[in-house]
Amino acid sequence: MKKIILILTLFISLSNISYSDNHYPITRDSELMIARGKFAYQNNCASCHQVNLFGAENWKGVDKDGHRKAPPLNGTGHTWHHDDETLHKIIKYGLVGIISDYEGKMDGFKDNLNDKDIDSVLAYIKSFWPDDYYQHQINLSK
Ligand code: HEC
Image 1 (cartoon, rainbow, N blue to C red):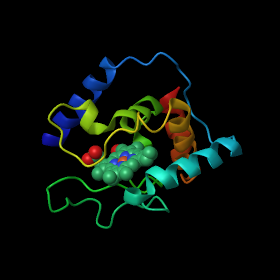
Image 2: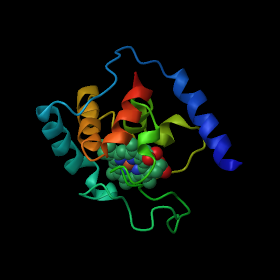
Image 3: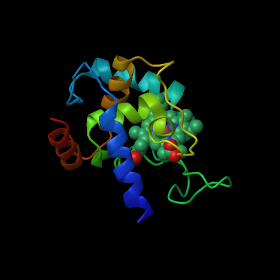
Image 4: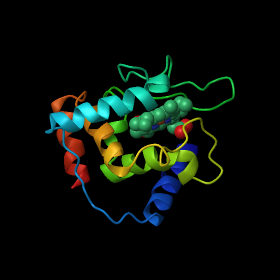
């Protein structure tokens, strides 16, 4: 039940943040974009989500502070269930910046990464996903 409320709150809050530039779906067609995303990923994300994107050990548990651990982004978790707009916002603002009273360890990256960098990181992340997950998520993002 708690999870359902969390997800509902997430979607309601997300729809309140306006985003003017629609550049979705983000594909993995551009090698340049993927290379740019890899660079940004290694500098900003690998410390928690790991170099190979497999996330923290026992990611489904919580850490000693009771916070969620970094989930895998490589397709073994549920990242591919979210559309591009949602993923972009999670990276830009963090869940902490989207859901009031949410306590978590991932801050948003809006001060370090511009929208293009964030999209490039997503292209890089998608380059790890199996084809059927990728296609499913592209359809969600249209
Ligand atoms: C300080 C550790 C940390 C860093 C650095 C970090 N994350 Fe996270 N990330 C998390 C945690 C923990 C979560 C789980 C949600 C929460 O509690 O905020 C998460 C969740 C996510 C999610 C949602 C995944 C899903 O399956 O629902 C995405 C996408 C994501 N992170 C991408 C990134 C990207 C891209 C970067 C780098 C630009 C990054 N993260 C940097 C810790 C981190």
